[in-house]
Length: 105
Image (tube, rainbow, N blue to C red; front, side, top):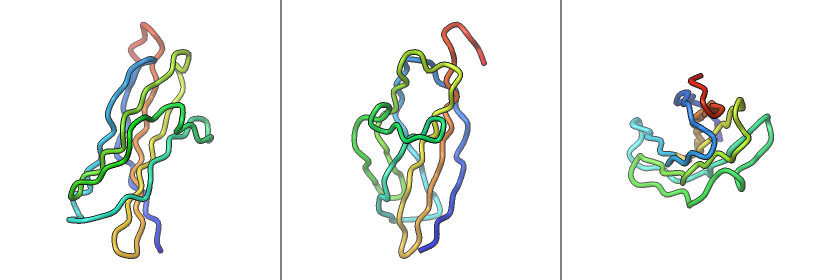
């Protein structure tokens, strides 16, 4: 099984903010979930940052909702969403840059 990684983008998010995490894979018509993980400083923090379940509809993966706890400004949270297509595994990564209260970048 191959493992391909695609960086979907860099987002800004604030402490205490919640957002749905949705990734489209337009090159595929059907796929299955390979799971979703959240990393901060190289450690898995999925249980602390994500709520909801991963759902796939066609080629769109809805990974749940990310919520940034207070006191996390200045960090980056990386959401890795994995899918399986035939015998291949693909991952999309979204980097959430966490802004401190009152900052613009």
